[in-house]
Image (cartoon, rainbow, N blue to C red; front, side, top):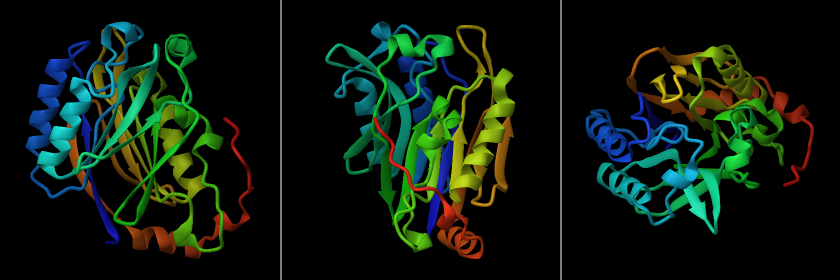
Length: 266
């Protein structure tokens, strides 16, 4: 119960073509040979990063959510990635956390990328989602959230290192190559400051706006050590993280005890 195995799928995306993306990811997931417990897909994995949500949005009972439910059940994994969702006339860049039994949680991206107009098209979320699996607490976030450390920050509430707010941060992204230095640097920073594992899963290839994505997906240990890094090509990578590594880092270097206490306002 102290080990968690996660598969990252760093992939190109078919621009605006849901059926092709879902077929592609279904084939990739079916081909995973290792036993895994979580499969991570990119931000807006079924469409690419779209600024015309009205043309691509689905309801929560739409085909992409039903596809996630089917795949999670068939593969017996937790499946996560973000999709475009419409509710009551508002659009959300929504991360879905789908369990094998069909139960799910969701997180609406808090920080919308104003530089690309996302803040004009999508509604911001105001609640974090910390999921739990096998005793691991997982804080699930989306792309641009990475730049805002307060929203990502551990909030210690007690004096025991195994009972901090979360053990793993997962960021799903469509992060362009031209800003990949920030992506790689901030993933390491989030791991160091939170004394947690961090996963950043990005897409690769050129999108419909001619923006190139280098991937640079990473797994970072709780002391900031890079455990996995892949750039410029598709990859399906499975890796196990260990609770003992986390506990040892927090007990040997109990920096979390000195952290500021704070309350995030919506």
